Amino acid sequence: MTEPAVLFVCLGNICRSPLAEAAFRAEAAKAGLRVTVDSAGTADYHVGEPPDPRAIRTAARFGIDISGYRGRQASAADFDRFTHILAADHSNLRNLERIAPPAHSARLSLLLDLVPGRTGEAVADPWYGDEDGFLVTWKEVSAAARALVAELQA
Ligand code: 4NP
Image 1 (cartoon, rainbow, N blue to C red):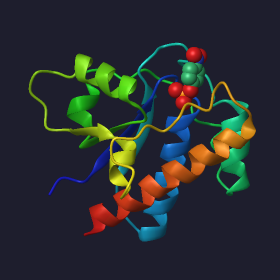
Image 2 (cartoon, rainbow, N blue to C red):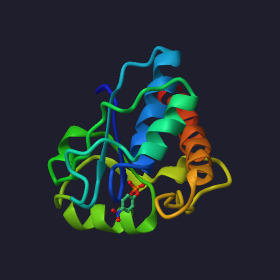
Image 3 (cartoon, rainbow, N blue to C red):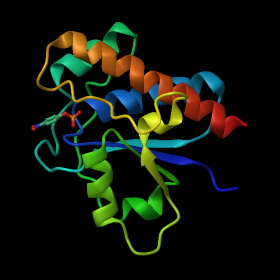
């Protein structure tokens, strides 16, 4: 079996997907799982930028330093590099479907499809709210990260 490679995607790659990447890296490391992990945005607004300060502070509360992450935009080539591409919301999912090459074998779905009882739901964008929203995001992406690690280990 090819080693799993997981890409988390949101709009800006500075709030939700960096937190998902961090949560999944931590869960995979805890489980001793060998996996490639990255995150990207469907938009190019924040290419080259670090995560939002509120996301950096939220990850730090859980002992994880994401200040070195840098924003990048998702591209068609990601469908060849990653086995799993997980979109934070429906708009991200539609945009990924739009750029996907005609033939690819990546599994593309909503991130919360991984969490029992949350199928079809979006990870709400915390960008416009206060810092409490980032904690909600952290809990959601962590639940998805744990579920994906369990699935990849099975
Ligand atoms: P993200 O949040 O998609 O979770 O990274 C956003 C970050 C920036 C913007 C929108 C959403 N923006 O419009 O710049």
